[in-house]
Image (cartoon, rainbow, N blue to C red; front, side):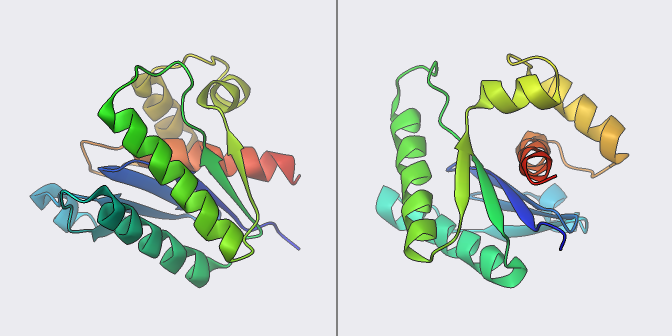
Length: 169
């Protein structure tokens, strides 16, 4: 049986999701014209409000929607970068990370978390790889030409999925 894996790059403004069946998703707080015309990615816009709990709930609901639809054996989540600068956005991202973990545990969905440096080292060859290097590697490997300016979230999600596939090989 072939493993069904989801890679999940969490963000309050632009969460990237990639499933091993080749589907990309973005959960965004701000839909652009460019996004609305992109047919290669399922894009879900949520109503970002001043209440972080409501934002987390909306993001979590869409993640559960994708999970229910795909029924993965494993979800690989990018862990919060330990070297990140302490800020409000880091606190919100940490909250989102643990909120999603709780949702998955509550629904008996298997997941692992992987530090960004670990998957980048294993799959890119450089644990400190910058976004442009990751995007370039993703484009070369997948031959993907998705026409979005902000593409790093789904590129990261793709590699997180590959990390999970490598584990299950």
